[in-house]
Image (cartoon, rainbow, N blue to C red; front, side):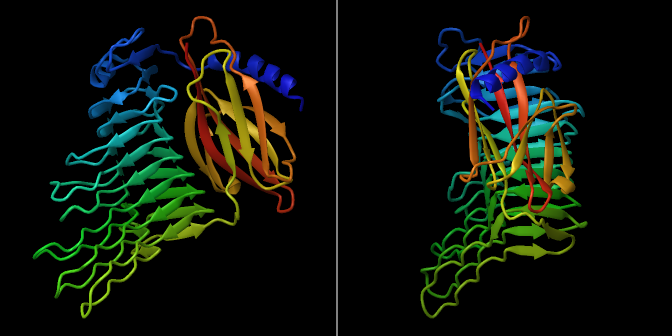
Length: 410
């Protein structure tokens, strides 16, 4: 398709699509109180925000925050480095959604960097980093992300790492309890075991992902690794073991993998004559099972800069096998549904708008540039959820890519 025609069609479609979604306002947070800002403290902005507001966060170091049953989007300004502490999301009702975009979250507190609890609405975490900095004797340090009693948490191009090198407090990268989570193009790593020190022996690495209470995980194009075992250079201590990549615990949890690598952590080093540690297992299964889907290559869709201003340059890139036909799916809503017949999770809420393209060239990549259209009259922003659906002619198989948010702000 001619790219000018493509851009024109996109502009015609985006304007009416935005009217289908509930709309709030854009709240600008800037710790330097720069021109056009509304709040200096992120916590104050969250307290004032209402359902469907967008918090546009400028560069800075912000504290820990909590969100209780509010449908919000938190997004780092373009090219801004935004640091926050822990993020706690609780009691999000069905039909609501929370989106985190471009944040760097690091927590030395007693609880995980990201906690999602009792949420029936959808949570999407895109282009974020969630980790627990290594710190000796940090009391109660915990995993990078903990999801409990929650219906749908999706991580896209996000890194998650548990507490490591912390005496007595090494923890998983991601912990799922009675919940469903999706990983696309993300990396999860368990915390590294601490090395032997004085009279304290080295500790084992933590698991990459721990699933209990019947949890479900779908992962595509991702990397899951157990933490490395601690080293021993003190006589009479054995070296520590690496953590397992996946640990399936109680009540039959289920894991579906598409083009995803799972590794155990490396064994700790030792000095003779002490015993060597053992590397972690790729998968340790107490109950439940792991289902490796029959897809050799995860597919991809990526939107350019987020957020963007009206009239600014945008691009969408599709990545798959040469010869794939592909659909571009778009919706103003988010409602993830696992569709194993399409080897993925449908992220945009129905009904969706779509374009059909193809086949992909020999490079396996196609990029379409376009110009961000104006924000619809009477609205503060345009927020849309995108996904690719690929059809492989040789196998007659459909494969969903990861999702992507686009956001246009004034």
